[in-house]
Structure formats: structure tokens, C-alpha cells
Length: 74
Image 1 (cartoon, rainbow, N blue to C red):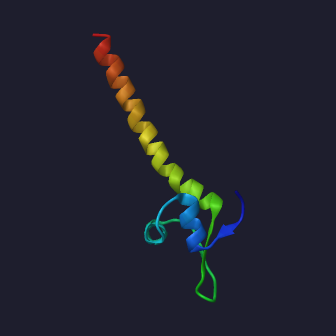
Image 2 (image 1 turned 180 degrees about the vertical axis):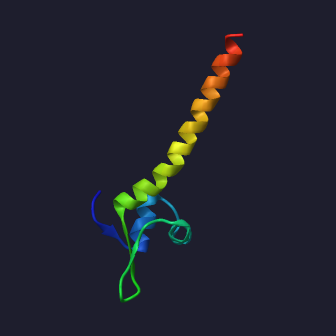
């Protein structure tokens, strides 16, 4: 998806509450705050923000796989 979303639509896109999305903004989710005070979030920024959690999970999976392989080859 391309473009910008308001808080409500961004939260819906990420399948989280608006409160959670606002927490993510404080945690570093890139966004734009318009002169009117309205906040907009790019869809690709949300994807990138969520990817950081997927990557860390993949790293854990890799470590577990290596350890399991070492344990089963002994």
C-alpha cells in the first residue's frame, strides 16, 4: 500500500488500537505532524517499523536452530 494514513486508518492497517499506534509514534515510528496538529503515517513506514520485530524473531529462530542442530549431532 502506498500513501499516508491518519491515526485511525494506520491503526486499522497494523491491526492494533489507536493507543498502541500512538505508543509506537513515541517509540520511533516515523510520521509527519501537520501544522494543524494532525498526524500522518506512511504505510511503508509502518511496514518498516513492524519488520524490526520480525527480524529479531528470525534471529532468535536462527539461534535456536543452530543450538538444536548442535545438540542433535552430539
